[in-house]
Length: 389
Image (tube, rainbow, N blue to C red; front, side, top):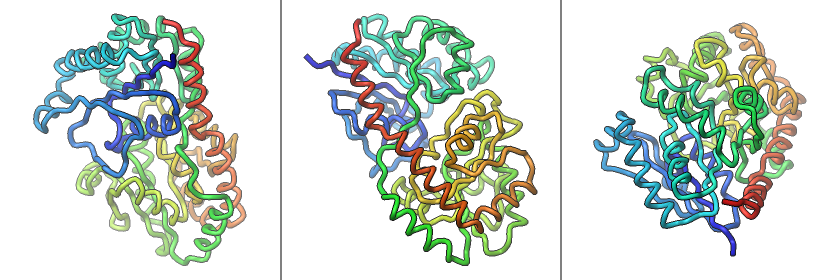
């Protein structure tokens, strides 16, 4: 008898958040029986064309109640645990694949329910946990108590980068698994990407694009540096930021510039805009950030960047996984110095260097091939077959 897999994550599609994209990509090619359980997030952007290919049960409340739950984690946590206990007791999966986002609520609740019901628990680390919680908060106390417990007793702990795996191996010596962030599918062939690049290289206007979230812990400071650079870019450069943060809030964060166009579009539309851009900006902060997170993270936006047919400029510390991976595999031009002048020169040089653009796009395509979800969904299916309670 084939076993069912249960997937638990704080949020899943149609919400457009990093963790939802990661989980949706990973399980897009999963062929076994599975069921997913997720919450909701007040104010998060939803794209109803961005839908899961598997059954999802949501814990969702009317607007103001959801806002209260999001704000008061100590109230939300027992509600999540009750919800998951009811669902998992009825589902009786062969294992639970639970995503750990920094708040930790769904992660800990699913672990507790698995222990009570005797279900194997697999923890999937999207970010560092304790390190990304606010000191003194309920989430921090939850993480400080449960992180060592879960890392000691979980059947599997799955990391997303080599840097993250080594970080946790030193912190909690044990065996770890590695599943990198996956590409759902590669929609364009190499030849079509090359053809599109050739057409873009003849354009007089140079479009620079940033997509994704603005995070104090990861990229806010680097984006501020980029905004300063925009002032000195030649007039033929057009800059767009596709972010869920409204322009007025971007202004409050020090990210506003009259030459930047601010917008938010659907997932499918964002991909089209990426394909038509001349350069994709991928920043991680050098200072005023969560240093350990910057060193170990792999930003979700990179997945779409890799398959866009547009050169990627990585602006991040040399110690970060992004800089290491882009340098090692050649999928991005790396600027690893916190210097406005060097960043400005790199942008201009790359957008005018046709052979280098071609090389980067080819390497990005190869990186995307290595990250195809089908490789890793098969591994998960094998784990489930071999899993013992």
